[in-house]
Amino acid sequence: MRIPYGDTTLDIDLSDCDVTVAEPAGGDPVDPRNAAESALADPHGPPLADRLAPGDEVAIVVTDVTRATPDDVLVDALFSELRRAGIDREQVVVVVGLGLHRPMTDAELRDGLGEYADLAQNHDADAAREVGTVEGLDGERVPVELNPAVADADAVISTGMVEPHQYAGFSGGAKTAVIGAGGESLIRYTHGPAMLAHENVRLGRIEDNPFRETLDRAGDLIGVDFCLNVTHGPDGFLGASAGDHRAVVADLAETAKEALSVPVEGTYDAVVAGVGAPKDANLYQATRAATYVALGDSDPLASDARRASDASEGRSDSDASEESEGGASTESSGPRARGRIVLPARLIEGAGEGTGEKRFYDRLSRADTADSLYEEMRAGYEAGAQRAFVVARVLRDYDVFVTNSEHPEVAEACLMCARESVEAAIPDGSDVLVVPSALDTLLVEG
Image 1: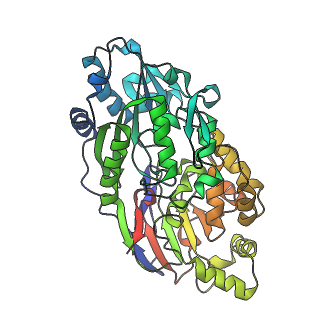
Image 2: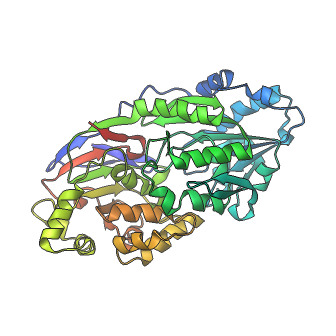
Image 3: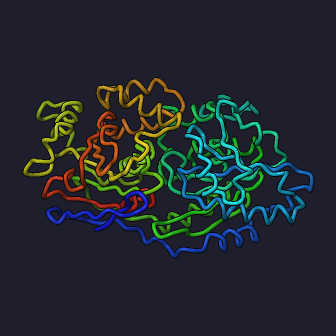
């Protein structure tokens, strides 16, 4: 069978295992330009032109290379509407919503934005300034910082990709602007241990999700005037939606759920979680597949059996992890009780080059065990390090194997196991669930 790997695919052979493949229905792909134009013609709320005045200075916040958003198409469609409102090109700035990710290169800007690349500037979180506060979990006031060009604009527009998100339920909407073009204060708060430990902060859930609610309140505060978002499945884009940011996310989340949900019954010894470009460029992004599998609506791995086995044998989590890292499990005659998640990922950027990615690597690479790191980080951590906290949560229960990578030493340094191939990471006789597109699949209870 084939699974995504970078910009191509990887052939894997698990003929000595009992394999189940979780492939969502996927939906019928649409042309993103046609979908965007249709969405702009029938938005949630007033049309874009009715929300603007001819003299307005406009900021369009777009996604970065970690999202497969067709920003060139979306920005071009938005410019058609801006011209109808009497807005000239010189009145528009395009801000790349990096959050704490690395800046996009000039070549990436040209590839991502086409003829509008000359209008673009990379967001710098250190330069963001406070524009107000929003209510947090327990009524506390949380500062909201914003890119100066966005803060000074008369109108704020955002593009985005509404796709399953570990914390927000689904990404997109106000998130592109308030996180992508925001400062560390809101990122630190929303990605802190208190928020991420909340029972309603989970993959695929937007209702009563305090993470999503905080982002939406911040979107109201900064004045996200209009959104144009898309959603996608394994085979392409599934639709577009435009207008008020909450309605856009709700609309496309329903489209995505219908296309991406796969019922799963029982438990498995191993899950192969396909990633592919652009998310498998670095370990920070690729580990999303592991957390989506283990911390979603339905966990397909058997951690209870592993814990019972470890307890009966007098082993700790760290003991089990050390055995796995020693490689004994892959040569054993049968699968171990401790489940494993296998991530084929190129890792052309290693751990990642942005501030968040570096903090992620620093935390994991300095840790002795997943348990000790998780307990340490429960007391708090710097913005961007939250992925280390969530990965540690997964590693407490499961082994994560990164295969076929260009930087196996990075995975080994981060409490994970590196193998040359998927086959080398899974013992013969294992019950295996293969999720070819883990980031485009919602595993739900069958």
